Image (cartoon, rainbow, N blue to C red; front, side, top):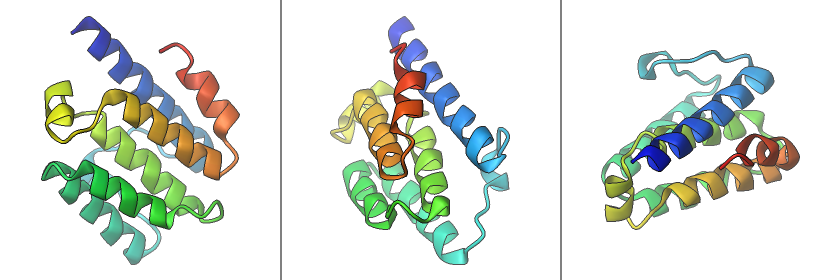
Length: 127
């Protein structure tokens, strides 16, 4: 339990730091999350819905269809999505055949697509 809380906190803080540094986004509540494009916002809401239904792997596959290394808003969406997944308990993740480690790997892979791998690796190295 202590390890789960620690890992969750490190992931959350790493994602929030990236959102602040790269997108000037402070801590947001769900109702405050917006995107410049309606398409991106709709896609983000669908990803969250799939995850909530326990279809995390499907949601992640759809997420990576958007990550092209150029569209910064897609990277923002990825960070917000993984931060959302990070709020799930280990039990809920396990039921969906997913893990906290996969959240870390997803954040790192998304960052790699946009050239931020080193920064993310440094932020997550405490885990």
